Image 1 (cartoon, rainbow, N blue to C red):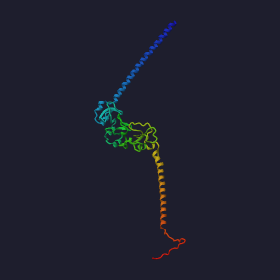
Image 2: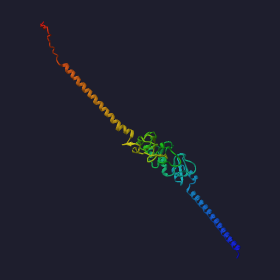
Image 3: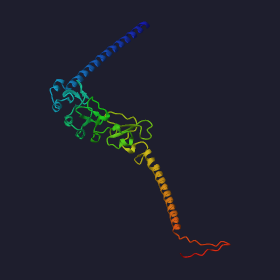
Image 4: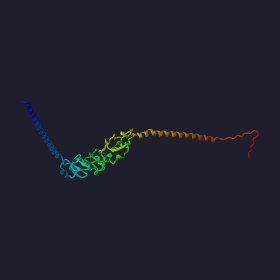
Length: 290
């Protein structure tokens, strides 16, 4: 066998090996594609099984019957039953009052902030109508949003505007309010008062140290702001001391005036005796009784 024949046979073997590898790769790619297609079809079928038929949901005309129809949710604002999940309807929109559980329906029967916030799973948004909607500390269920100062999750927050408090001390004295300080809030006056407990409610954000209690406020000494503490501990005693000194000085002056007055009155009450003294070279003239 010549060298050329050996070389030709080696090239032929390499070509056969390359073709087999390409054929195997094509088979693997087809298999992968078939597996991906089957997985997608399975996922779509499962989604169809889990998601309620919008037409089936729309047949319900009240919240509780809507909850009994599988994966449906009730929108109190539009009073319609829609296919959806906790995050909101999958078809259509609901701006206010999204219910996804039967217990959520109880919220729509509350017409005051107090009774609403005392009902489990409900909160009161004064900007909504109806105002009592399913929700938590973080905000309403679904896609609706409510401003922090309008969102009430506990009775103590009803009728209170936390944003009206302008200091950490006054803010944290109100149950249900908390103080979010700004940068360099070294006296408890630079910040914002918001509704919340362990953190701001209704999705509001505080980028600094959240103060829920007065003891957490900046420069608070014995429950008082540092300025108030300085006035109470330093200024007030100084004022009292000055008042005492003035009172003592006035008392001393009055006592001296009384002693001087008594001395003058005593001298005025003593009898005065006039003695005639003969002058040299003169004689006293006798007196005669008329």
